[in-house]
Each structure stands twice: as C-alpha cells, then as structure tokens.
Amino acid sequence: MQLSYAILIDGGFLKHKIGSAKVPMTADAVRQFVLQLQRSPELSDMRLHRTYYYDAYPSSEVVKKPLNGGVLDFGKSSAYARNRKLFSDLAVQPFMAMRMGEVVQNGWKVSHKLLNSPADTVELTAEHIQPAIGQKGVDMRIGLDIASLTLKRQVQVIVLVTGDSDFVPAMKFARKEGAQLFLVTLGHGIKDSMREHADLLINL
Image (cartoon, rainbow, N blue to C red; front, side):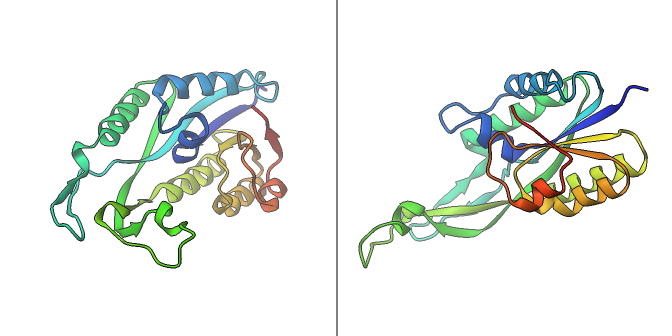
C-alpha cells in the first residue's frame, strides 16, 4: 500500500527562509517549494494527502503612537495588503488548507539599532519605538493537526516544515502513535531535541 503524507508549514518560518524584506515570499514561491518537496527522494513514492499552511491574519487595528502622539493604522500598511494577498492566493491552491491564528500587539519595543549602540547613553525618540507584534493560536493549531492526522490515521507520515523546538512534544506524540515524522529545516540550526524526535531530516 502506498504511504500517504501531510505537509505542515510554519508560515512565519518559511517567510524568513525563502523570502526577505526586499523580496517577500509569494504564493507562487510556496507552491514551488511544495512541488520541490514532493519531488524529493524521501517523498516521491508517496501520496500527498494535503498541505497545511499556518500563519496569522495581519492586524487592521488602529493604535495610538507613543511619545509624539498620532495613530498607527496597521490596515493601511504595505505588509497588511501583501499578507492578505498571500493568504487569499494560497487558499485557492490545490490540496491546500489554511490554518490561521491572529496577530496581536503586545505594547511597544525599542529598536535593536538603538539598543546595540556602543554608547553608555542614548537619546530615545519616537522613531526608535516600534510595535511589539506577536502571533496567537498558530502553534496550537499545528499541534492539534499533528494529533488529529495521527490519531485518525489519515496519513502515515507527517512532514513538518519549521525550526521551532516548541513542536517537540507534538513530534514525540506523533511517533508514539505510530506515524513517522520528517523534518524540513531549510538549513536552519535546530536543537538536538528536534533531531532526536524526527525520523528523518529532509535537506532542500
């Protein structure tokens, strides 16, 4: 019987590995990545069940800016429009399931450029204050899908695209329940615990 597998992509991780600030990741780049992964020797003889993409919808919140006042409208940023297009384009790809969390603003932070100054004292201005943005619910969805795919025996192989060691408990669970866990890190340095609880590391 031909083995089947599911690809689970940590979207935030993939954006940093195949995209950049100057050339952001596109839906076509994700599609090409998935095709390349399907053609890898480790997976070429198996059947793809589905690709799951995990990320968070960009915030459209309007917040007050510190120090000099005014407001910051996240919904009018280029990042907002770019990410909305990315997600809408991905959603119509064949055998693609979107698993979306949400973006939250957790106050404000000082820019790394200012903090890395060699001076003993620095002058803090409004331009040095940046919104502290985080994701909510994304990691949980990855963990739940790993458990569901494994317990329901929908696939025999989980292909996890990430470099985040927070998924080690979910990886251990999948293997304990009889699934094989393949890890795709795209050259990213990972902790020993991730290598230990992966059956195979696919190098692309």
